Length: 256
Image 1 (cartoon, rainbow, N blue to C red):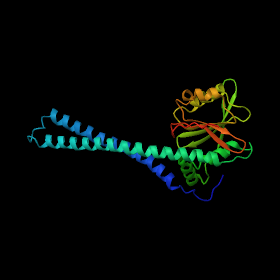
Image 2 (image 1 turned 45 degrees about the horizontal axis):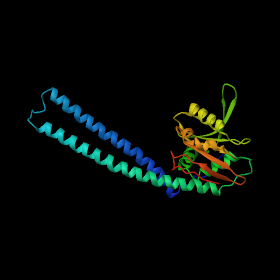
Image 3 (image 1 turned 120 degrees about the vertical axis):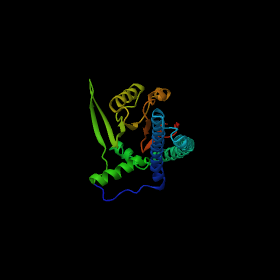
Image 4 (image 1 turned 60 degrees about the horizontal axis):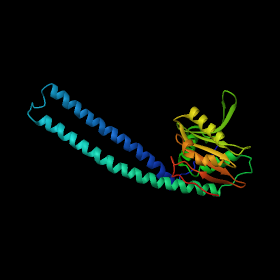
């Protein structure tokens, strides 16, 4: 699908992306300070082994001690204050994503089973900034936005179909159980296959169905232990959230 212009990220979406960038910056800063400390200790040990620490008497030692104290103080301060800021920002963004997700689900309609997966994904573009950012990146590099990829896995006894979108090194995975209401065994199989095929590379896993077995809700915590799993009900006119993974946003159960 060719697109003529970039889709501008909203202010909230830009804040979300910058929050992620800040997290990465925090990690890099901590690594740099750690390297400085390690280098200081190395110099200290080297000078000590060559009897240079006190020749001249205290200058070299004083310099090294001062450097270690300053670097250590900066590191401790940044870890304490930075961790609190990241935690606060994460809570805000989780709440924003939570509200946006459920609001979008309630406002999104579909085309009467013609292309449920595509309709749902189009809705997700307004919820998850990572998807829109990946679209813009793809458009810049290839001139086309990301496409939904229908992936058929060859299992031992059958073929298993999934819809996948690649976001950098992660996968956004969707499966619509068109002709069946999902029972616990079906969802357990879905989770098992996803864990096996995409272990460690998962952005989000979505299960779309018209109805879910009550046993699924009782064992949801076990099913979603290793992956961010969303259970979305396909209604006659649109979508409704049943359970949303807390790995990306706060867990919330909706009753109907």
